[in-house]
Length: 326
Image (cartoon, rainbow, N blue to C red; front, side):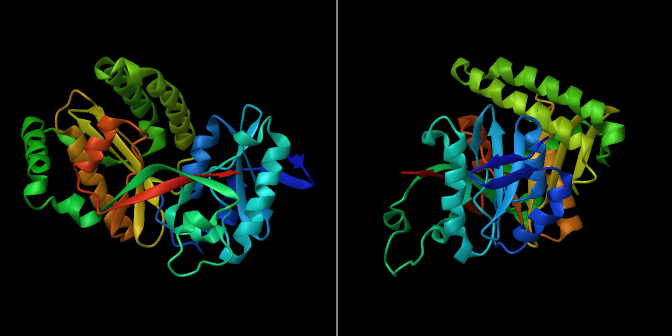
């Protein structure tokens, strides 16, 4: 993929060789967002072209979808450099795009909003000071305490415990294996396709079109995840019942305290399967990474998924914002 020269800035292709560069900027940030890792962005660029540039000593990631250029993350770097970098990035997007209204910076972590203002006076709302931008609140990440997901203590988790116990009783032949893309790749793709077919059966018609658009992107992301699994430092598990693949979960470490679940799918027709693999993967994430929190991403705007994620009693809801230029 060739470089882009826009307004005197060189945007280079976003490939595996950029991993160390991006991680160097990420390690300075104190954010728990599921979008703030190299792997989380890399696997989704299977359906779009990724580019990056170092601007004002910040790492700036761009996504080209069709002919329009956007940013899936804000500039990553020291606070003092971010505001100038944002101005330059909007200049790049505006020069490339058919309309300035197509230019935007997505998935901005709540803790980073203050980076977009030069001075923050006590008692002043951040939104009031962002005179050059429009901030739109989007989805939220669901973050849980790892121990809560593992132990499932108390009345609030009574239903989850029952579902897991019923699953274990109904399927004594179940087995958890550490995921290996060479061994398990085809089986999880087949399971994903079955999951899509089952979900469509029970989905309200008004949600189906949006769902299918997202499924195309997720299918491509799974293929990219399988291709570069080891290089991306991912970890996963596969659930078998009597020799058949019935679930898989893949995640990674975000920082020293938080890990994330990137993709998880189970057989829709096996009751208790989802609850069981979620708890087992939570155990693996804590054992391997020594983390305290698990981020399972957002609900993509689906009410049913929101209910499921809320039912696990999140420790924290992390808002994500999109930034537009006035």
